[in-house]
Length: 354
Image (tube, rainbow, N blue to C red; front, side, top):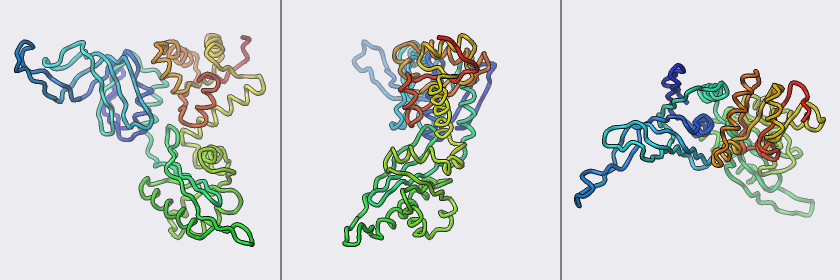
C-alpha cells in the first residue's frame, strides 16, 4: 500500500491500493462515521424529471461519502464501502446513497476525527509489506496440496493426485508424481515470486522431492518440514513447526498463531487470560489488559448488528492503558480458535476476579 498523503491533524490519510492484501487492511481501518473520498462512476440524470427526454448517463466523479457500511469478502477482490454523499459536484445529489468499489490501483482518502494507534500500526504494516509471499507444499505418497501464505491468512492454490501403483514389494510412487510436484513449485515460484518455499511431508518423501529439483535458485528458497497430513490441516500443522517459524516470524499469520497459542496456554493454567466479551470488558475496565485480540469476523458482525461501538471502545481504552491491540484474521487457524472463544480474548498483566 502506498501512502500518498498523511495529515493526522486533519485526520486525513490518502492511500493507493497495490495488492489484494491492502483491501483487507482497509476493511479494518475504515469504520462507520468515517469520510471516504475518491473517484467513482455514478449514474447522472440529465434533464428535468417531467421531461420525457430525460437521459441517464454514467460519469466519473469525485465524491465523499459518510460511511455506513463496510463489506469485504476475502475472495471477492473488492472492498465495498457504502454511505451517504456529503460532498461532490453539483450534478450529484447530496445525501443520496452511494457505494465505492475499492479495488487494486484505486486511490482513496479516509478522514477520521481521530486515528487510533492500532489503526496507524495497521497502516504502517500495510505500507511496509515488501516481502513476496511464501509458498507451501504439503504432500504424502498419493496427494499434494499447494497454498500461498499471505498477511491475512493463506489461500489454497491447487491439489494434485498422485498415480500410485501397488506392486508385490509394496506401494511404489511413480516418478511422474514427484515431477508434477516440482513442476507446480516452479510454476508458482515464477507467478508469485516466492521468498521461501516450504516443502513438507511425512517420513523421507520431502527429501526425495528435493533431490528431483534441478533449479538451484529454487533449492535455496526451500525449507523442509514434517507434517502428518495434507490439505488445510497439513498447512496448519506446518505453520506451527519450529523449522518453519524462523522464516515466518515476520509474517502476520505466524505472529497471530503465536499470540493465540499464548492466550490458550494462559487459559489452560487458569492464569493471566480473559475471553468472551463480558470477561474482556471487565479486564479492560480494570486496567489489566496487556494484549487484546479481536477477530475480523467479530468486527464485521458487530458492525452488521450495530454493536461495533462497544468493540471499538474496548480497543481504544486498551491503548489508553498502554496495552496492545491485535486484529486477528478469521481466515487462518488462529482466528478460528479465537472465534471459538467469542472472537475476543486478552492476555493480562495481573489476575482479575470476575
